[in-house]
Length: 255
Image (tube, rainbow, N blue to C red; front, side):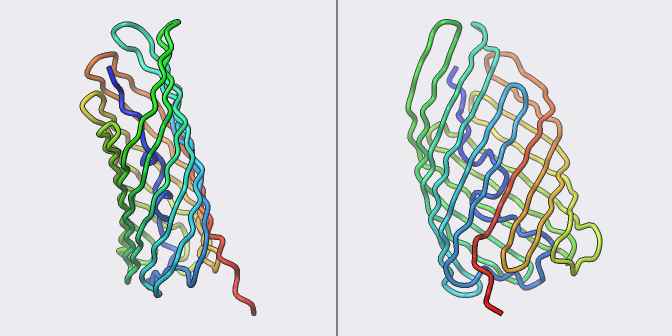
């Protein structure tokens, strides 16, 4: 059974750009000028764990549009029970690509694509197999603010190396005054992913602390129930946990 190796789409929606929190004002403008940003994340459970570190350089064409380039390193650990026994996979990966962003009144959109390269090592008992996989990863992210204290976001990705699709929808609500620039947000997230060999579903709760001064940043925590179904092998049900971090490194303006 050839299981799909998850691309960078496994992470929270910090790959293409920040999930603009509802603390952002109704005019969601992009950071001015050229800027750089960093993000990192980890998510998983006992059988599957995924982490990544990403950096990007962003060019702003005006207050609404921008484009950039991004590079990211990742690592996936995955353990499954197949018909012939247990299989363990360790897969470091590299992603290099470009993206476009558009911010309008209460809306934010980003789409990007790039090369996804992974080196997968599989152990089945004493047998060891190694394979290098190449593919194109396409990812899109969108966000809508129905009011000043809440937002609904969606993220989707496709990896051609294993024909794997990953998608997540998140609804978040700010605690406290909607005009605050630093605040906690609570919400729900629904996730689906898979290909011809494996399908996964999860539902969870998320907590996010975000700030929108000149340096935008956010930290996000999530936890919930996850299920994987295999065409061959045993299905499993787990509790998952996750954490994500984003920081825009634009310099603060001089007073």
